[in-house]
Length: 214
Image 1 (cartoon, rainbow, N blue to C red):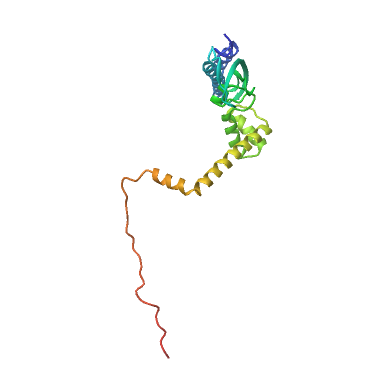
Image 2 (cartoon, rainbow, N blue to C red):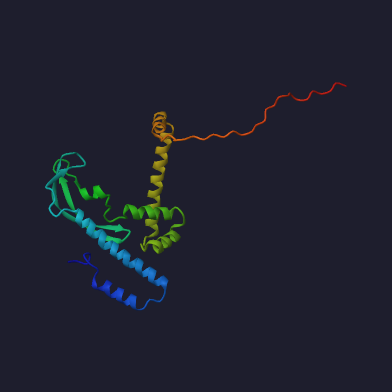
C-alpha cells in the first residue's frame, strides 16, 4: 500500500491540527482547498491505475504503420495536472516493422508526460492572454494552487492562441463554402410558429411644391 491509496499519516495529522485551532474562515477555506487537491491527486492516480490493465495485450496495432506492435514493458510517466504531479505507469509497445514505440493509454487519454496536462495548459493560456505573464503567474497560482513559471505561462498562451487561430481559419473556410452553408441551413431546426407585426409607414403621394411664377 503506497501513499496514493489512502491519505498518509502526515495529512491525517494536518487535519487534526487544523480542526483544533482555525484562526479564520478564510484560512479554513484555503486549507480545505489544499486537502481537496491532495484527495484529487489520489483519486486521479487510482483512476489512471485502474485504466491500465494488469495483464497487457501482447500485441496492438501500430499507429504509425498499421502493423502489429509488441508489448515491451510498463513505463512510469509524471503528469502535471490540476491536482499536482501524478505518476502513471503505462504499457509501452514497439513495432517490429517501423521500430517506433508508442503508449496506447497516452493516445487514448491525451496524456503528456513531463508536461502540462491539456486542462492546465488551457486554463494557463486563458490567464496568460488576459494579463502580463508575471502577474498572470501569481493570479493563476492563487486560484489553482499550481505554481508555473513565466515561460510556462507564455508557452501555454502561445498554444491557446494557436488553437484559436486554427478555429478561426476553419470558420473562415466554412463561411466561404456554399455547400457547407446550404447543409447547415438544411439541418437547422425549423420554428414551430412564426409571428409578424404590421408597423405604420409614410408614402409620398405628391411631388415637390412647384415654384410660383413671378
